[in-house]
Image 1 (cartoon, rainbow, N blue to C red):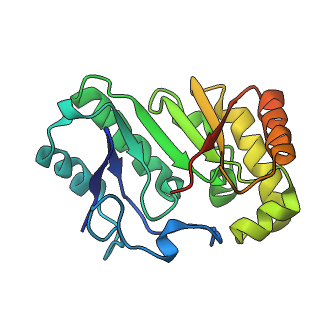
Image 2 (image 1 turned 180 degrees about the horizontal axis):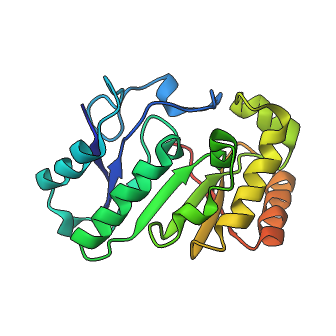
Length: 200
């Protein structure tokens, strides 16, 4: 199984294939790997100990950050994610840790999950996708329904109390300039950064 894989200067952690969304644009719909990683479809979820052991196969001095992002939503295993992040920081000189997320962990777990990120994660990157709650549901096709958009925004507002760098992203070419301005305003009102990322 591919648990850790390289993208650019980062080492990525693929812990789960579970996700509450079925996004219309999800890369896993038309590929099974990233950057020559080998298949990111897991036979089963690796244990925390298996994930920790995988780091021995990599020269950690090569990487600028550790990124939790695979073929599932990493916060589906939030407690395990935090344990692995803390382990990596302790073992590899406080390596910067980023989590790429749909921002729906509060709905996944039925609680305010933001405090769990404190001290373990340096950057949280949340897929905003659109400034419109109805359009958000159309795009993400998530199992939580129309409340998901507001829950995602609320998570962004809360997690910035515990994580120094919170970024919300949209994909270039998918929104009009007016929609991007609306997204920028949402991020400004929340006090988080806005990034338009290139389409892969």
